[in-house]
Image 1 (cartoon, rainbow, N blue to C red):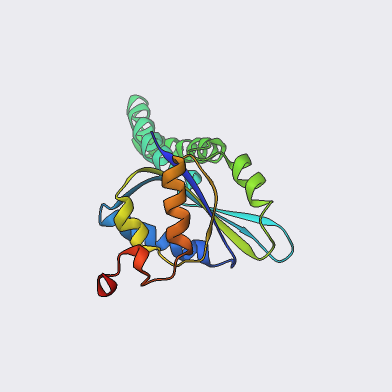
Image 2: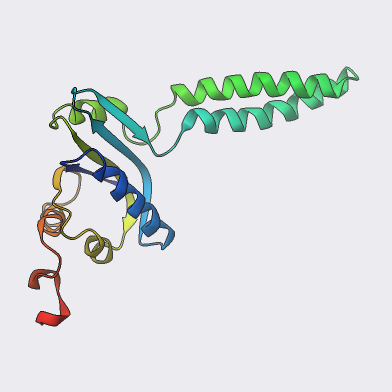
Length: 181
């Protein structure tokens, strides 16, 4: 089961940089993200979502491949595989893009928009679904971000540890600085 974590930031760029850092931690197998979305509330109060997965492009690509394959096979029946390839690829890409744009994978977009609308103008929020993580190592990477936890599905103790790690300054005794031990 995945855990939902929503973290709010005071600047519009901070959530993007944290997501980039999480992507690098995912390559090191310290965190396994199921979905991630950055919500930015600009100075005018409009909410903009940046999905980590572009389902429209993904659907178009897979539709193009499967449509081309099936089109070629049908084209062989009518002794014109190139026309079948072209028509099948076009139809497959179109239907794949449409189905990708209508799909909602991971975190519900309406939930993201409603929660992001409560944040101050000129701020951002990071919505992540975490399958699994190494909490001690991940929290050490984000110590002192001066961010706030907006919502989680974590246990109360884990949520408290996350908020403490985000609000602490780097190098304090509570984070286990070896120089002060």
